[in-house]
Image (cartoon, rainbow, N blue to C red; front, side, top):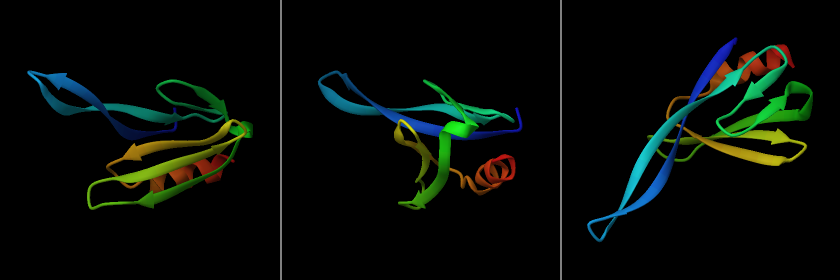
Length: 90
């Protein structure tokens, strides 16, 4: 693995008749030939581009543009280093 980008997502939970959101954590792992997400694996040749858009002081969205569509991942930390590493290998 060359670089790992922390990602987060929120899961809605009903507890004691209240709606709560639990934040869960994982990573996007960049290898020399593939990217492994919590649910899928993409070959680098199947990823056309990556982009990032901050949307608050705390979160931003990292987009993987793939042949299966655009996949979105929420991040708390800037993915600039991960994106730079992707572009180096691509």
